[in-house]
Length: 83
Image 1 (tube, helix red, strand yellow):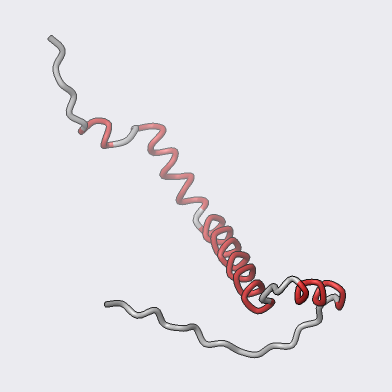
Image 2 (tube, helix red, strand yellow):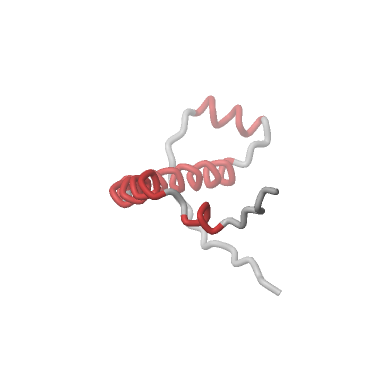
């Protein structure tokens, strides 16, 4: 059975608009959890953006190859003969 490892946490100091923080607390919003989820999404989006940029030439090359030659799977697909 797989166990889910808890990530290490670190205390940080942040500067946040006082009114926004007070309103979030009144609404029982978990500030740490909310920040962590949003930060995780931002990091993932940036990683994806950078990966696409770093690999754009290879992606363009394979797309051009497929435009010229089509997909191999299309040629291998079994097609029933017409009667």
